[in-house]
Length: 206
Image 1 (cartoon, one colour):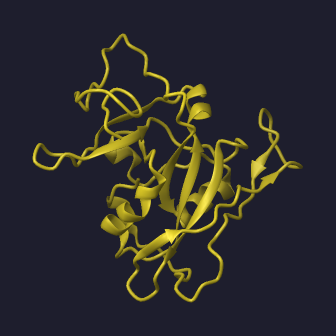
Image 2: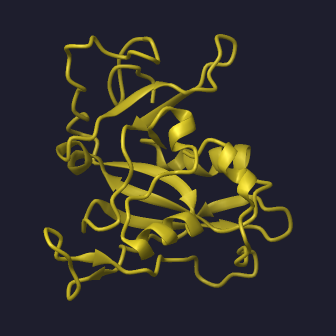
Image 3: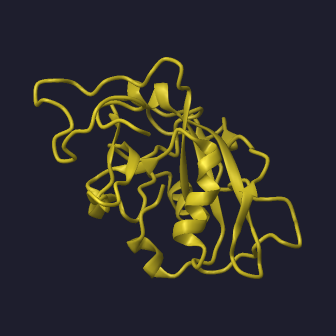
């Protein structure tokens, strides 16, 4: 995520106006298939259960976008930097970026709101939420293994495709996601289900 004008490349620009007013958001590079979003399992499950789009707690405060990353391997280190002290289960959504763009949702890599000249922070920004009812948009869900002892994020577990209920549907959408989200296999180091405190919403979610 090194660009301010596209999903993967470009030059430094203005966070408030990354492109000329007349220019449409550029499409994702053809060689990028997926992007990744770290989120609290509880928040995602709530959206799935209600069959509503998922928006991270910081969506409005950040600037009406959902944070993401092209690099799945960086998620664990980011989680430990920001959320080690936040109890609860976390998951990583694997999102089909080409399909997301085809829905008219812009994806831009640019300065994060917390970025400063001395400590620049780049992040991939999805200018919209994530649908919980479109089969295939979220390709996989990765449970994140944590240590019970200190909350350290250890690794992403084996991914599982979201369950799709082909029998249920609404007008215009004939399939829906199950209210169940894949979780990590039982492990003595895995975190148990606990309530997530509200103060977690004040932190950026990747």
